[in-house]
Length: 462
Ligand code: CS2
Image 1 (tube, rainbow, N blue to C red):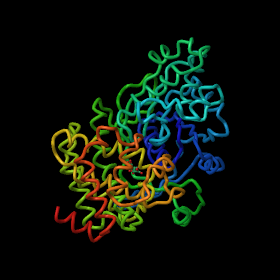
Image 2: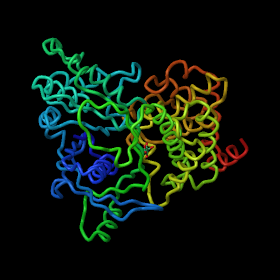
Image 3: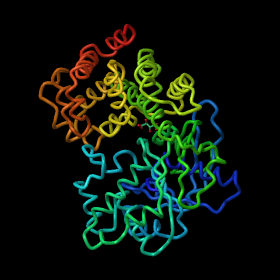
Image 4: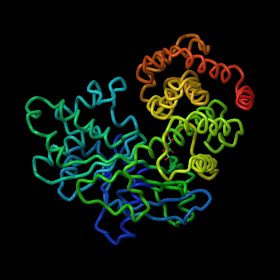
């Protein structure tokens, strides 16, 4: 089963699974994909028997490939009971997830499940569940009742400790069930039957455009509505903690490691953080794609220096990862001009990403008495994006809350403290750190009053 059948899942998880089957000869695996909010992908895949094309873009791209590891695709919104039944089915051994940061319904203040979330409450109330955590908990509850055996839940989202987190959220859901159900020993059953290994996933997968579909049609000779574009690079590091069988992903190049936390921190705080930095600087300078943004020398410099000066001193790299090589490779991947990864897409859902990608680096530096100069630039550029984008255009689940926090005056000295006051993004300690606020105001006013020229000067002379 896969929950969250977007472009990333098709270009990453489905490809790894097919490669594992090809390499190992264990061809009995197949993925039932579940779309979450929109049913588009399920509708696109159904008439194609689940087949779809992966078109690699950029240097080293492989020829077009039709992937066949998805055997069924259903809309979770339209078939919620079927999702529960599938998770509970004895032949289901692994549930993978790509539901994005916001899909986990985390309460930013507690870091646990947001029990005030209307959908979570409705799922707890007993309707056929619509949230991913509700689907998992209800599916596992049914599995425990029918004795369908152990299963592994594998989160593939960009969150630190994604496995442990998913387990915590499912348990929080189980503990919040109404009294009659709470008496069932679901959490005890989870302890002995379900594992939640953490993983680090990596592949840049832009949204497919109409032009991409036309290009695939010309090359393939068939119209494929479900085609996905991807960079040639892909990586998967998985904690070896499975409760039941799994495809032999290691034969497809996945790395099984007990150091996933270090891999995830490196990826999130080096790659994803610089991605966000480039997205918000790019949006401020009207650059449509990440490759356009990184082609601007000052922005390249800012990303390179953020990794070298702010991030590397605050993380412990996993064994075997060469820091300089990794950072250089990340910047080269961003520069891939054929990918068309938009700054708007990478810049979306900032309220969900900033904390994970940038604020740990900010804290690490402040604690060590250093200035997180470049990470602060990224946060300031995000703040400016929030303050200059009309509410209806701000692609963020907290758009309304962020906009409501904005003062009438849009000057740096007013906007920065107002947004720092958003408890869903900044904790009080960080919000009240004068040095951090000062850095944010500094960068915000440069972007706001001097634009690209001002940024070029300040970055190059910094
Ligand atoms: C990106 C990621 O959209 C984003 O926020 O930073 O989706 C990024 O492309 C992937 O994590 C790369 O593995």
